Length: 565
Image: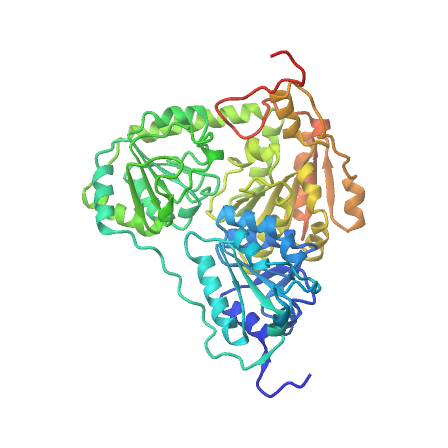
């Protein structure tokens, strides 16, 4: 192909723009419909590309990279079936509000949406992408390529953040163009709260003696403002997405112990709650029946959050950091101080909730203690949906930074391990020094088994803690609790992980008694790249307390077919 002087492919423009966005790593699967972009990555050498084994895993990697580095995650796929394969991980990123840029190829412009059975064609693909993304765009010409990308990145990074898809037809990717002079991304503007709204909210809160802050994922960047309110005597509780916004060893924070009975009892002694950057999800409010303090106030960048899930006495629309800074200014000027007894009572409720949780872990309390001891303070804590995460991982290990915790918010199993790869790569390319710990169960783990090869190839610095009971443990517990003990479809044929790991050169150790755990953890931490630490739950035993699905206030028994009514 003749290449006129001073021209590059449009794929190179994509790569150069992402470099200007500060992207240091991207994830995806190479294909004939994205090769000009990935060829430019390789030629320019500025962005590390991680070759996932499937688009679903690649999307999870980009999501966790975004969350753990507090920056833009990038995933590149082919079109048609490949764009369809990423749907589940895009839904997860949408649920979590992760700023992911999904760039998908598209067939040649003249054939799009013509129903001509062209290879990799998907009918009305853009509509599908709109359903699983915060927004979706199609590049329709070489001339509007850069403008479309700039707008897509701006939308992804503007609160409420989320994943954005961009289709780039292959003929546009390979077209020769002059490199644009201005590759700078568009500014990201924070929603400014109204002064009148903050005045009124400050006046209301000044009347409270025992106020609590409920901190969600939308306030992860507001640590400094939250700490100012803490100095005025506010107590803090976080959602799982908000974990680490306040270090979880802070005496004035309940951490993510937000639905436990001692904490709910504490709520009833409080005379105000300010919910910041949280959707008050059903999973974290006992399906909206958790008794929260009144009056209830809310701050959110999404105006549509007002009145959603819980009615509120006042709502301020705006960026959480800006709003809390403004609120702190006003309360400090008024010399506000909360009742100091609140923090005494908060600590007592926290300690009671922690003691109950740890007692329910049975032998696994020692596992938690040992991992916390070796993890230190600078680590990523990435969790899949598994009994162990629901039992303890969503509240323990303690984390200390707002970007350190990543979990499958949408409840889909099997996403934790590729998420951990994304977080581990993020730590490597940013130089954060964080070791990534991944908590997974054997049922979900096998769904993305192919990504183990990606993990080994990339030498991702991570430890997988695989809780192996050779079954869907939570399904069996739900069947015991709600289906009269009628168990079905929950027993799993599980690989011999020692043999599997040897076949792909992945260091592995199996723990069959907890006395061996310290030595195995030392072995895992000394590995330069990934390590699989398998916890043999059938040998060690079960939890003392049984987890039977998302917490609710009621459990309905399902009678057997033909049972008397």
